Every structure is written in structure tokens, then in C-alpha cells.
Amino acid sequence: MTTDVTVDSDSQTDQTTALIKVDNLKKHFPIHKGVFSRVVGQVYAVDGISFEIKPGETLGLVGESGCGKSTVGRTVLKLLEPTAGSIQIEGQDITALPPVEMLPYRQKMQMIFQDPFASLNPRMTAGGIVGEPLIIHGVGDAAERQDRVAWLFERVGLRPERMFSYAHEFSGGQRQRLGIARALAINPELIICDEPVSALDVSIQAQIINLLMDLQDEFKLSYLFISHDLAVVEHISHRVAVMYLGRIVEMTDKTSLFDMPLHPYTEALLYAVPIPKSGARNRTRKIVEGDVPSPINPPSGCHFHTRCPYAVARCRTEEPKLREVKPGHMTACHIHDGGVKFPLENPT
Image 1 (spheres, one colour):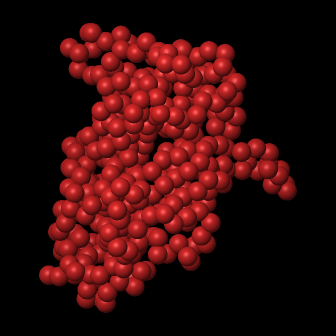
Image 2 (image 1 turned 30 degrees about the horizontal axis):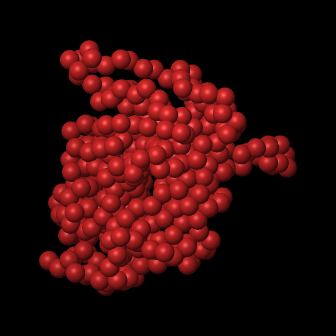
């Protein structure tokens, strides 16, 4: 069985050059009201974030539900049009490209969705779902596409004879494998993983995570891995970005983040992770008070100041910028100005 279906791509990316670079990205959703649909406000879902991902790297994006993580993934892929900012793929700005001109870049970027059932067409066979990207991009003839799909099934742990089954005939973990196979079909360089294991049993989660890591090694893939599960993010990511209410508040390599977080919100997230009872005896319990503010009317200054135990007057009026506090460790917190550190214990 052949697997050599040629997919047009540029020359190999320099490993020191960012595959994707996002600068000051914003996505605001207008709120309409009345008979004439007047715009009466905005939902500030993503409010000015910047990051880059290098070839073969996984950037984990974590935060509470509703902080804007999934909106980031969909906006980067331009499934949602950005309100402001820029998105560059291998140095090419794709921010303002119309859909027809985005087609070549769709080969470089694919997505694995959170709900493996809702993202699969119930009227198409599994083989048709996985092979559809090959048809859209004009890759190979019918026989080559069928061989490619059969090979993809085997590579993600599905039997090729299941190509003629429908989505409802698969288990949840098998459906997610279908979604992974579909994302791999046209040899992308970047895959957005939008909470790909949150709807699965814990035992199946481990299998899917290990599959994604194996595929990354084999195909030199880059991942933007979106999740609220810190244990999963620590396992799969090289670097981690922490989001709160539409903004990135901390970003560094995973070891630095879990060993010594520099933002109070990151500290709170890590203290919320359950640990064995024997280890909990020596850890002071810290709970963040209050509720997450509305993204329609976020607080002025630092968005986290309404819940932060270390907040000072400056936090209420001046927005902290994401900056490098330690080599390779960026955070957006006024407490670190002048070398002052808030009293962190090791939460792990």
C-alpha cells in the first residue's frame, strides 16, 4: 500500500525561525440590541495577545473556561476574522487575506476539535471524512487518495476496513483518532489542538496524548495545544502560555512555569491542581476569591486585580505589559517591577 501522496509545500522551514507569529491579536464580538441591531457593546474575547511557535514545538495555552483560549485557536486559523493584530505564517502576513487566498495556507494549518462527534459529518463515511481535505486541495487521484486514507487509518490506530463505517459507529476515542487522521491528511506543519482530550475517559486521554507526541516526532509537527488541564499541558508542551480574561499573563518553558510561577494567577491555577493526600499535608491551601469578571466589561488596569491577593493601587489603573522578568520567562505583573517578588512557595 503506497502512502506517497505528494502535497505541495515550501522548502523546509529554518528551525530557528518561527513557523507562526501572532502579534497583538484581538477578537471582539459586537453585542447587538433592538430592532435595528444597534451595537451596544463588545465581548473582549481576545484582547491583545502575542506569541510565536517554532517548527516542532508545542505551545500549551491554559486558563479557565471562558478566558478566550478556543477563540485564539479559531482566530489564528482565520475561522474567525481578527478584530486587530497580525498573524504571520513563515513570515507571510495572512491577517487580511480573503478566503480564496487562504487556501494554500490551509495546507499548513489544521485543527483537531474538542468534540469529536460534533466535528464529524454524520452523513459521510469515515473514509470520506478523512479524505475530504485531499479532494479540496486536489491531491492525487481517487486510487491514491484511498491508499492515503487507508494508511492514515492505520497510523492513528484504526483498522482500514472501518473506512466505510459512519461516525456514530465509533467510540469517542476512535472519533478523535478520525479527527487526528483528517488533520494529518494534507501534511500540515501546524495543528491547533482545541482541548482534544477533555471529552474522553482518562485512560483514552493518555493514548491520544501519546499518539499526538509520536506524530509530532514523526512528522515534525508544531502544536498549539489548548487545554484547562495542567497535568496534560505539562506532559505534552515545551512552553506554556497562561491566559486570563483575553490576555496572556505568563509565558515560559514548562519547567520554569511549574517550578516557579511568577504571576499570581498562575500560582492560583497550580494550587488548584489536586495532589495525593500525603503531599497535600505540607502545602498551604490558597483559594482565589471572587468570580471571573465579565469579558463584556473587564476591569481596568490588570484584569486580575479584583481577585489578586497582592494587588496594589497601580494594578487598578495601569495595564501591565507582558515582559521578560527572567531569561525566557515573561509575565505581566507590576509586582516584579524593581525586582520585587511576591511570596511564592513551590506549589508542586
